[in-house]
Image (cartoon, rainbow, N blue to C red; front, side, top):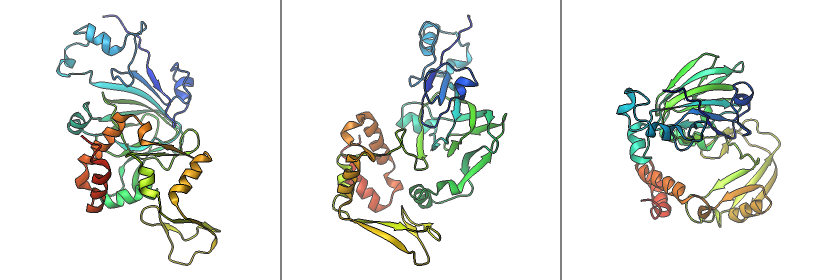
Length: 314
C-alpha cells in the first residue's frame, strides 16, 4: 500500500492562535488557526489526499486498506487533531456512545490529549473540585462563578490526559495539544466565561419564535452605578448581594427592557439572532434536547419549556 500524505481540514475558532502554522508546519491561511484535523474521516472536517479525494472516500474505494482490526467498526474509529489554545476553550462535555448514537446519530466522544507545548503556569480544567448539586451548577453558570469549583490541573510539556465521555473539561490558554478522540463532533458547551463574539459584541440567540419579546416586553428594570463593588458577592441568577448598605451614585430606570434591548441593537451594541434566521436543523436539535431533559427541571421551568418549545420538537 502506498504512503498517503494527507492535507488537514482547519478551523478558525475564536480562541485559536497561530502556532500550528508558525511552529508545527500546518499550511493554512485561516486566522486565527485553532485546529487542524490531520487524520479525519468525519464529514465536518475530512482529511484530503493530494488529488482532492477525502480519506473516507479512499478507504471506501479500497476495502482492506486498513487491515482487519477496523472491520468491526462501521466508521473509521478515531479522529486526530492539533489544537492551539491561545485563549481558553469553552467549558464543555461530550456524550457517551449510547446517548450520542440515539440523539445525535454519531458516536460519543472519549478523547486524550498529549501536550506538545505550553506556557509557564499553564493549566486546564478537568472535572470538579468537589461534588455540587444540579441547582448550584446552574446558578454558577448564570452568575459566572463556575470556574471557582472546577478542578484546575497544572500542565507541562509531555503530559498526557485521558478524558472519558461525560467529564466536564476545557483546554486553557497557552496550551498546544494533539488530540486523539473518537470519530465524533458532538460537543455540549456549558460555559464560555461571558465571552463576546469576534466582533467584540454580545450576541443574543432566540431559541423559540419571538423569544426576546416574550421574555422582556413590559418588564421594568434599573441600572445602578456604584463607586465601588467592595463587599459585593454573586447571588442567585445574575444578582449581586451585600451584607451592608451600598452607596449608589446613579440610578437609571428602564421602563421597558424589551424596548431598551431593541435600542441597543439599533446602536450596534448587541447582535440579535432571530429564530427565523437560524438553521432549522439547529433549532430542532435544541428543542429536542430540551424535550429529552424536561424531567431534570423543576415544575415551573418544565411548564415554561412546554409552553414555548412543544410545537418545535419532534
